[in-house]
Length: 235
Length: 204
Image (cartoon, rainbow over all chains, first blue to last red; front, side, top):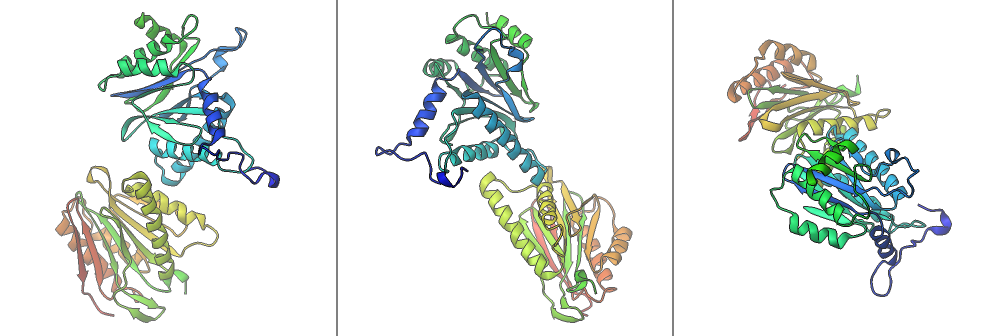
């Protein structure tokens, strides 16, 4: 990484033992649009706000939720371009695993490898950490799983989590509403209600994005029409 | 003489009812001279997965060490054993990495997969997988082994009958091959136990 003039790392320790660049990266994440994920008993849902800078932007061309493999999807808070790079790398890693073992990659392994990439960028020459936190949702032989990956490369498994602006309100809301035996439909409703809490303006199928994976192990992004149906149920 | 026939070997794996058997001869030779009569060709990867390697002995040993290395790392990372099908894909990939300077080995892989379903396969020295539902053979005695297995195989044999069939097929085939023989080593694997038996055949 980096040319010979930058073979030293730009991310260095401060006297208090912190990596300041990572703190700043987390700030970048914290000012990004809210995203959240909820693990249900029979699936996982991830969702995010999709606030576009102008009404002239074609919202159907913006896809904040992406799939990494047919049974793993991901959403982010923070810098979109950094997210695109990570998605590309993760997809490649998942395919390499499949090429070697002819088996779909387990969610934990993909999260671990993506986290390793993010960590590399905190300890290599001439590069900066990624300005995104990811929420990875997948369903494999170990059941439904939800992981958060931070710019430092640390990852955590969550039952429900939120990131970005409004994270503390969203997490408090989720703590109150989450139950272990929640089903996927309930989880989608809870996700919508959580997004609604901090939403400025009128929420609709065009300014939020929701991705779900249920027991058929196929990740898919809901269409605006489907989101509108869920919104109507929530009202 | 071909490099595959330098050391001599015979390997066979056969599927039974919720069990499998994997067997090999015990001779290690250097062309016409017999060096050892207790050479191990079949290795345990984990309790439900066995690997037999025929062909050049040095390559067989090195390849086994590399595969066990990969499998141990897999076990540590994924906290589970490798499925036989996954292991076969791994072996195939590792062999193909050396496409233009291959390992002179022909592996035979046998294991119990999900729901105790037996899985066997063999591949050539550059990783072309050959899955089979009944039996696979490898080694210098392979032509005789094919004939013997084809004649003696029956589907859904129980463990004891499978052992008899595999032993007979192995011993009669290596008798027709000067480079393999000096007894046999048979593993019969069921979901509950692994039975290892040494056969005494014609000691020549």
